[in-house]
Image (cartoon, rainbow, N blue to C red):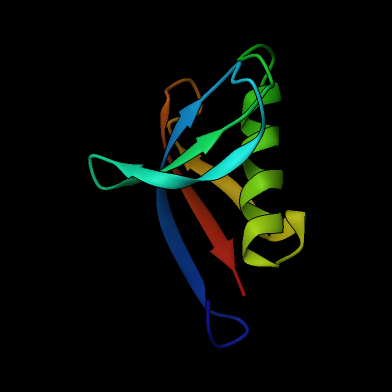
Length: 80
């Protein structure tokens, strides 16, 4: 991410209930995000946002799921 105030979208493939949290790899043009959280009550979505924010070095509040709330394939919006 470059200039502050810039907004980007990132395509991710979520793998819930993984053995450990990890960001890395690629599948079908999407970044793989593995999370130990279960896909119940949006917990996995929150975990994905936290992992991506930490990986990119931005505050968690700057990352949100904009598409794919109930799917493993998600689109995240990242500000900054």
